[in-house]
Image: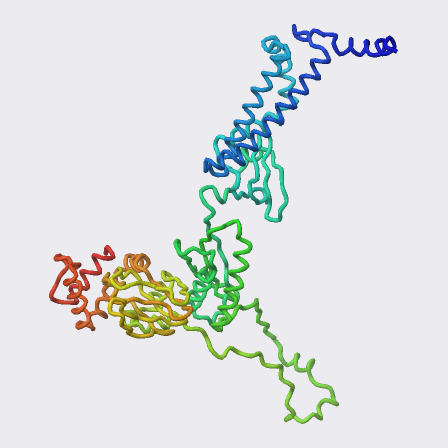
Length: 488
């Protein structure tokens, strides 16, 4: 039995152990199997090292996702290459002698594997230059999605729909790629809106800006902007431009804003027209012959009323208009519609929950507020003294904003409240772009000399009045004060 097994296995053993000369190295089939085994071990260990670095060690070191991917990939590939060389040396293969074979095969490999080589080099370029990183939202050639992984051959992009697309690295390095999140996800989207010719452009502007601020993803800085694009065939053409915090959510945000815009336009009675064409009949008498009623229909008395289509319900009440509320402010009542529109544009909406404090007394007066809905309580906390309750349509803080004086009371919300806010930054921008407005405000403030004198004295008592701007004439003081505060 032993002889039979020996006769059977001896030829196989000879086949596995017989060495063949390759480039000066003697290699057997057993060495090849051992080489493949150890190379698999190196590949598995390199992959495990990459995952350990990316998912554990680098996470604990608080390195961001994009850098984790780069570091883990480079270290794992470097380790794998080193392990490959160690295995070859351990098997007994002289690496110096393989250089001759590698040089001979180099040209053939270069032509046969040029795409793989190009993708490999492009992958290294992407990893080192980091123009595209893991987590970025990119768009190219009609494809958009998130960079899920970058390897040395290809990049995985996950689309919004959840599919994974494998893109060769050479395509990403050689073509124009729009990286929406290179620095941040903040970007601007444009929404065209057409309204009927009978619409008030100022009210349309106010409504569009109000709609923008109702969407939480819209940023207040940079602030939304409304452009009057022109006069269309059947509509006044506007465009709402808003900056959003996540451009990758653009389809969802565009839909949300369109819903809000349509609702607010309807609330204000602003119609969105449809294309119309006027038809002129050259010979109307010929049309009368064609439309003459039949003989039996001529007996119908003319007094019989024709059935009327049902009337759609109309909105009985409209929301408060910021424009009309600004007109109630003494200092703004003589501004033109265009100037009021700019006031509306620089403002934004702020929501307060019940009992939320808007500001405390003695804090800097850096904003002016109009109550659009809800109510607020005004009180002096130091004296535990209730002053008043302000409701929708009322305003406060205009003098504190324009004169830069501290708050004299604390304000908190009684119920859920929405405020229209003009802060110092926006007001300063308006005055710098239209310095003539400052003189209009000075003249309006000058009509209340008594109150101005009180405010001036208050600043003197607090030591906040600069000697260079102090003036016995309250109007002159206001003029100097505005120039100093708003750098006019």
